[in-house]
Length: 91
Image (cartoon, rainbow, N blue to C red; front, side, top):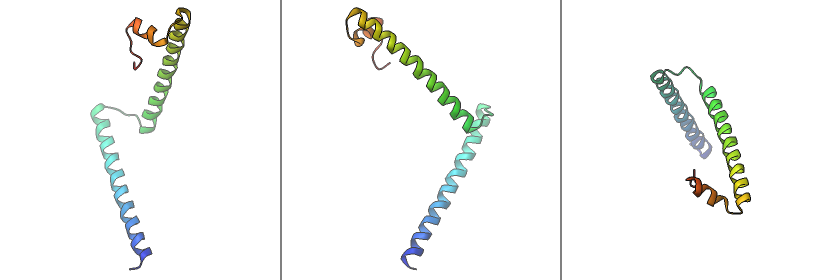
């Protein structure tokens, strides 16, 4: 075999492995969906997750803006405002 045939065989093996992995993931998803009694498709699940993540980020940004307004009024750092109300900056 020459170099190109060797590379082609390697790529074909990789494709077969990926197809097998994909099949296993699909089976696993179907099994978990049955266990969780979830009828949603992966696309719907991910779009719901993204929607909820966007909403969370918007609420978080609004909270940070409010905390910044309070910090500006008190003429202190936003970190001090968070400490005063019992939250860490990581929350």
